[in-house]
Length: 305
Image (tube, rainbow, N blue to C red):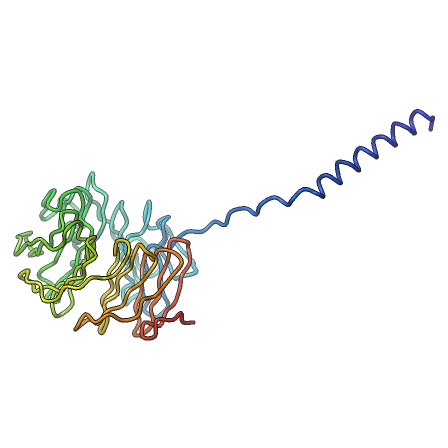
């Protein structure tokens, strides 16, 4: 090798060494952001295993395998005794057999759905723009009432007799429907603001609203008990069990109340907003906006395994 070639090689080696040293001294690149799909609905399977629906429209036993059921977030999910599923998405209501075979799909033309109840082969739906309708497997709705709850219906609950249902929505009202023909049996102003969720146990409807109030009602609209949930943000979920009523708050807390007396119980503190919950005796499973699923003891208020 000539002297000139040697000097050029030495210079290149030195330059590469400087570049390598600079790279070594640079901080490592930040880790890639963690990707997750938040669970938006929870249900109990026939074998006791929890099932979930997520923000991408998938449903299945929690942890998989999943299948796509909807074109967007799953609003609610029920696993039937035979292993079939009944799920609600913004696009439709869907029923699948236990083997994953599609059985039926119901849609309300030109409306996104927020809630639905199974009525045999029909479904009762609550939708955006305040519509409530009873849909058939094929053909037009048996009945449909438009814009009855302002800009949206947020929740539905079936009465224990199966003949009436309650709806809540953006106008703050509760409306009691005769499900056979859509006659409004009763209606009243329930909340100052939005009426966000409703359940109907044996003693009568229970609702929660953006005003922070949790209210027990008679089916005729008389308030039996009215308490403040204590959430710093909106209480956007309601779970009613045999002994307890549970509210899910936008302030990252879950609050427990006695079902029969409304007495406040433990406050469960999470580090992300709860999206859905599944109550099993004293155990509560919650899903959160960070993609996590947490388990709680609602008697003690502490996380459970």
